Image (cartoon, rainbow, N blue to C red):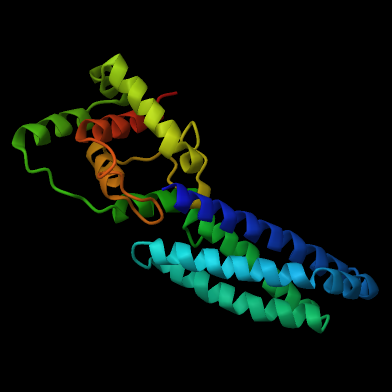
Length: 242
């Protein structure tokens, strides 16, 4: 988990730095500061190579870990592969049209990656998240009944069903393994992580995700006990409470 988070953070940081550098060059071009642009190209040539290599390596690794190839991800890859040569040619030849198109594509694909929605909408991402989760059936009839009962209740009722020790332990686990991407209040959304504060996923869906993982999120079924998984999933429900 820590390795994946580190790679994800590195990828996001490098992409942001690359966009800042590329935007700076584009601004110089649009302002007709060709002498300054040529100077910037010389001074940042090594950075361009480093950033480009890191983006490819970290992006390739994250793609390898990603479960499945949703439509938004395929479109992102295609657009990035289109934006890169446009940007290179645009800056090299001082072509404003190519540079502008490349800049728009880069920012669009960044928003696409963050929201997992073609309309750069967080609500679209949540809808996809709800329908794409894999469901693992619970074989024990008693356990199924308990989960169904808890799922039907409001977040306040789910919290009330947990003992103080369980809730405290679940919060500690959440802080350690979930907070980096989801944030303390569940709204951070790093790397497209679901907004837990507004998510409509049921308790059982959350248990399945914690156990099996989804997308860049690894499963924790082998690291946490069954009770810890259920408590952690229940804790994420508390984030819906204002």
